[in-house]
Every structure is written in structure tokens, then in C-alpha cells.
Amino acid sequence: MSSPDFAQRPPWTRPGFIAAAALLLAVILIGVLVAVFAIANNTRDNLSGGGAATSTPTPGSTPAESSTTAPGAPQAVPTAPPADVRWELFGQTAVPVSASAGPSRTGETASGYAHTPEGALIAAAQISKRAAHSAGRQSWEPTIQQQFEPNADRDRLLAALREAGDTPAEPGELSQLVGFSYQSYTPDTAVIGLVYRAPAAGTPRYHVLSLTLVWRDGDWRMVPPPGGAWTSINRMTSDLTGVIEWGAR
Image (cartoon, rainbow, N blue to C red; front, top):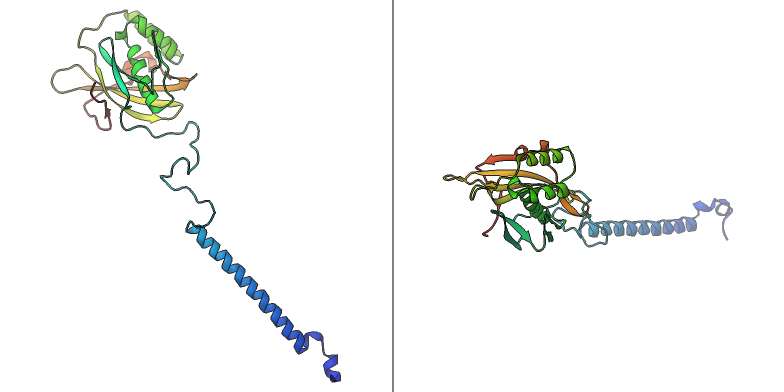
């Protein structure tokens, strides 16, 4: 029989209650430790690549592994000429033609270029050559009217060429295209330097024509030179550092 003192003691001071409480506390502590261990182990697996968590793309990852390039953002450009280029004579000079990059339509003008860095390159070479005074009015007039961005500089260029009249180039006096460089490129705008070898004896001399093209209405179109003068975007050089040279023709 329990003593009166024991019966009157509060329940939480009795040995049975204390033992039960201690057991419950131990069970809770064990559960907490198991949960903490599981969280730590899962975090370690994710950091080492073993978990299912998505990792941040690292430099050099492929487009499929990283975010999609935003429209208008800069893109990588080729470091070699298009592999399928062939050369065709246009007047006294050779111009590049590519089955993959264009042009797909030729006549009074040459149009239909791929929406790629290679397409912009071929467009720059074709359009600028056909818009030159040496191409003759039957070529430069429709080319400038149809394939140049309409603005005051385009009007000045047309006026200057019309005033100059048609004077055929003498054999051997025209510069020949020998290389190029991408000065900048996005799917909307390309700035391409076309490198020409000047027809001079002795040490080779080159000039670079920095041409700007924009993608408009499904094709590459040329931005007229400032002031309507080709000399405004032309510079002489003897340094071909960074220039990609065309292969044999």
C-alpha cells in the first residue's frame, strides 16, 4: 500500500512519470537527429551532383544546358570562311556565292541571304560590290534603291553616283576582296570589315570597308555610308592581324 505522502505527491514527481517522460524525450531527440542527418546527406549529394537539384550552368555549357540566347544578343562568329563558297566574276572582280548562305536570287540585284553570320558576310560582299560605281548604273541603282535602308544618306549616295555618270573601270584597276573580319554581330545587326587588296605594284596595300547590315523583312539590308560617301567607312592598312583570309579561288 502506498504511503499517504506518496499518494499526495504531484504526478510529475513520481518515478513512473519521470521514467516515461525521459523515454519520450529520448525518442524525440533520436527523431531530430535522424532528420538532421538526412538533410545534411541530401545537401551533400546535391553539391556533388548526385541529387536531383538543378545546378547553375557553368561557362562553356551548351545552349541546351544553359539559358536560351536572348533575341538580339551577340553571337559567336565563324573563324573561317564558309566551306561551300564558290567565286563568280561580277564585272572585273570575283564575288563569293554560297549554297547555304546565299544569295538565292540573282538578276538586277542579288538577294536571299541566310539569317546567319555567314549570310551577313556574303550579303556584305555581294551588295557592296553591286552598289559600287564600277558596277554600272544598271546594277548600283536598283541595288541601292531596293537593298539599302532608306534615309538621307542613301539619297545622297544615289545623287552622287548619278552625277558621276558611268565610266567603265580599266582592266586591273579595281581592288580584289581578300579577307574579312566580324567587327560585331547580332541577329539584328552585323558590322563586317571587308578587306581588299589595292592594285599596286611592290608592297601589298590593303583597304578595309566597314559595312553595317541590318536584318529587315526577311533579308540582310545595307546601311548607307555616312554622308552617302564610301570614303567615310574606308581606311587603308598594311596590317592584316585578325583578318580571316579567303582561300584559293
